[in-house]
Image (cartoon, rainbow over all chains, first blue to last red; front, side, top):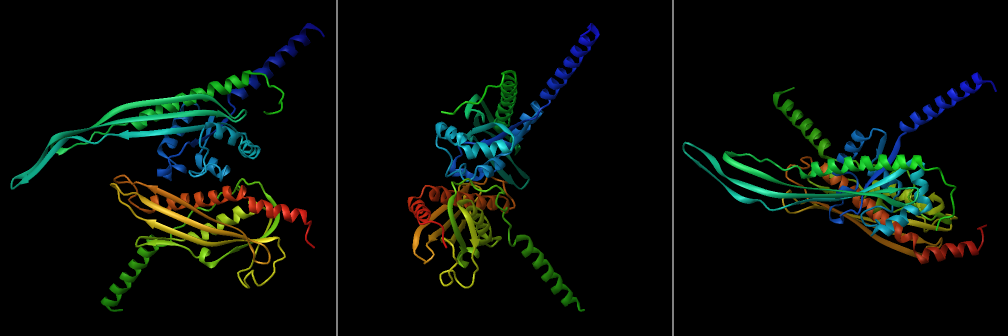
Length: 228
Length: 206
């Protein structure tokens, strides 16, 4: 091979590798999201929730290459295994469910590589303080001050659907207070701990998904061996 | 047309629009995916009693036809449970007309209850109970299951000003839960597995 041919071959190889890398960087990573474990006393969250909506939006904004599949789709695909009354009781049972052949086939058919299982919520204290309101012939109004503490704790586990194992755990906690000063009219100024915690967790999950996907891309593929 | 007649006509039209707006509430159909179930090698006839097909919950604001939505879900469930299912006609009753199947599975009853709460400290609650029975072709009971699903939700102030936004998903969740419990119970049921094993050991039907 003459030097010119060698140079041309090297150029074509570099170009092809570069294109492959660019293509890989733009490859969509499909991630399912599901609330687990669910609180059976408020099962309305099983099909959709504010936290799910907020996490999905945050992950999508932070990592546009990640597509989040809603929990309704996941629950439908795995029905009847993930309903509030039939959901796995602990992490070992959740891992065992993900390792089932039929479950793996269902999730693989949708191209899913990861599953985010999130949990947590907001605890609100009772209102403290007081507001007095009155009215007379000349008019009326209120005077006083009330406040209420609020704490949101959210956590999530990122499950790899290849090995049915948790690859990352993330959590976010925020505290705040809602206040209601009243001078003639009461004005409620509500804390946004839920939105803040959710945004923080979503950003961390986006980073974790991105890191895990690139680690996996960098690891050479191993031949599949028998499962334990 | 006199003025009174016109007013009466307008009132009737308004009432009709109101009833239409607050009348029957549709429930989302079941998912396209078949439920996950370790399929049983049997050819089974499926039947839905009228007490199940026509069940509904109602209150002054809405009426939710739980029966048809339940039947749609059980059609999927039964199809996932057995290698082959055949829908039996409503008439004549399957007990009087041999179907030639290995057995008959019937959704016998759907009981639904809706308790409206408030936006302070009383949650809305929906409960759905199903009775499903598997019979041998001669009508002998092999196994019956009674499963219930329940969903409750405490509305916040200003949440669900249109109550249907909260109640319909709760009905759906309760139905899903009851069907899911049935499927999980049936999958591990020893009586049904023994019946299926006996079918296999007796060889194919002539």
